[in-house]
Image (cartoon, rainbow, N blue to C red):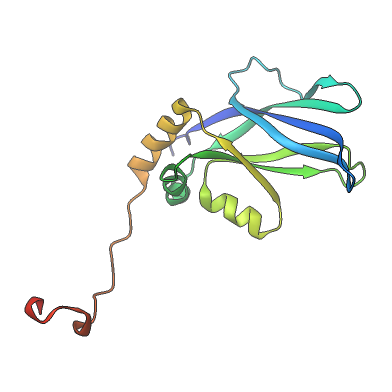
Length: 159
């Protein structure tokens, strides 16, 4: 069995204290970038002034699977292909959040959203888009149309 194509990414999460009168903490996925090993192996705080915090989470895998090829194709055919980042807030400490999963499959992101998970997206860089496109071109084969139009919908001269 051949090895699956994969890369590692780092995710930057930002936290803002009391972004509105209804929230104690607000989070956003600020950036996803390819991790070539220069970010280390453990999550770390980059900035924390009490009101604004940035955390870096390195080493998250993004692995491509042949059975997700249609999901990659759908992502690539949008106006702006994206990373999908599923992230969680700590139930015991709602001031903490972390990324759980990063994918480039539209279908996988939809399944996560259907399961009521938090999923945000950020644009894919060109080199990752090209990598994903090569995989999708090789493994995605649209299903042939199975249904013929009824004769009543075909013009008489074409019957």
